[in-house]
Amino acid sequence: MLSIVLSRINIFLLILVIGVGISLSILSYHYSGLTADQIGEIASNDIRSNAIIETDGLAKTLLHIIDPVSTNLEILSRIVNYSNIEGTNVIMDAVQNSTRSLTEGYYWIDENGRIVSISNVNSSIIASYSGIDLSNREYFVIPKETHASYYSSAIESIDKVPRLYISFPVLERSDEEVFKGVIVASIKIHELGRFLQSELAPQVAGNVGLMDKNGIIIYGSNPSLIGKYYLGEEFQSLVPEEIRGPYNSLLARSLKGSAGAEDLILFGGNKTTLTYQPVFIGGKYLWTLFVSSPHQLAAEVGVLINNQKNFSTLMILIIGAVALGIAFLILSWNKRLGSAVNSRTIELKDANNSLLRYNKLLESANEKLSIHDKMQKEFINIAAHELRTPIMPILGDAIYLERQFEEGKTEVMVDREQVSSIIRNAKRLRRLASDILDITKIESQSLKLNKEQFNLNDIILSSISDIKAQLLSSNPEQLENLTIIYEPKDIFVFADKNRITQVIFNLLSNSVKFTEKGSIEIMIKTESDTTDTNYVVVSIKDTGQGIDKDILPRLFTKFASKSFEGTGLGLFISKSIVHSHGGKIWAVNNHDYGATFYFKIPQQ
Image (cartoon, rainbow, N blue to C red; front, side, top):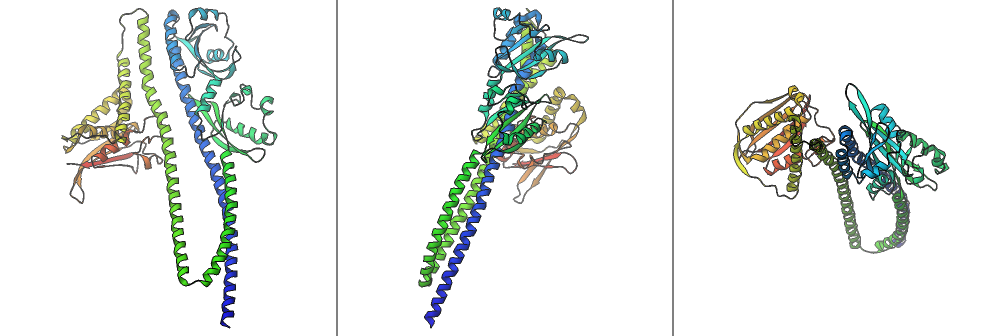
């Protein structure tokens, strides 16, 4: 009787195990499918996100390579001299050499539409072009009528090669502006397109396109469409009929001067993300940059996920069959075997949890690498702008002085403003080079301190004096509207005098940059901690814009900047200097206006 009862219990347990196994298999299959869909969506979102970032970066790159050409044209339009054509030719040759990787040449055209000079071309060849009348060209007509710069769409030149033209009017200023011709730079569109395509990151497998604000194609993967209207028959005939409506609507939205990203479902269910970014020059919307990114990676991920799903299903069935055998053995084995199985199960769970933790750490590391890569790209753009800003005035003044020597003078007059401009911009370059050198020392852990005993009051007064002198030469109006408050107080510290001066000057410069008017208050005090260590605390409080909420969490990291007004290195360097002294640096937004920066270092 007892054996019959045990047999029934065993059968019931086997049926229960089978039922549980089937249920778990079904749940696992559905969970696997749900996870597969989520992974596929994550892959698509990653492609979309990368495409958006890449399009924004390409738009900024396009702006930065066009900007030097515009600057060169503006300078040339002001210094061309009909009485000294040879001297002007030398300058045009130098300008072309500085941008030869992008520009095909610079042209000087007189008020009648005749060529006066071409960069890097001798006078005999230029004479052969003198009979060509260019007065009907847009790059001549529009600057003549508007007295303003002109950026063309795709224009097919005499040699049937499409080019992009940028022109600035040459104006003679007396009682009124008199049109005296134009300075033109030509860019081969195919070269520009190849450059943009080469700048596309390898992980973004796509194509680059460029269209002007009127819907004229400037560059695309199909050269025959350059210069064509996107709603024209030639372009529309190449668009698949099933996506023509949504595609045209997308292009229409992209020409309104805003950025965006949208997905297109092609024939066969293939998906492509089209991202677009407007390009503004001089505050005017001129072009829209496109990047198309097919979801090839997401499709491949989907195939792998389905294979994994099938494999998981097979494994579940195998595990279920093995589980039945194990369940039967468990019923006949002793409790020690059950204990061993439970112990092994716990170990497997721990191993699985460890793998999950490692996966999360890897995801976090990848995210940090992505953020760091973006920050480096932003820093490159910012540093390029910071370097070009002081170089161009120095180059302009030097060209102006050289032109005077070429007129036969052995001595030239230099006014105080020119000298001040050259010195001011040279100092700006020196500061940027010094910051980059300090970053190198910090990264290589070779930053050394030369400590000495000095009065903190002296370097604060010196920094205030330097800031006021800097404002007096660069922005006297701000100096009149800004009050720097400091009550002198003698406090001696044992530290590196030059490095602490660098920290105070950086923090004070940062407050001045974001405080157009109002006040900046500097305070120093001493305090002790629980270990009876004496510290000197310096605070700089301003009434400026305050700290942006996106910047605040990473304020003292490298490249923390949201504009082209600085490199974002000063606060990182200051933090490294303070920490190397065994101190601390931090900042908070004030309750009313502005922000307050603090740092403290041991007094001895």
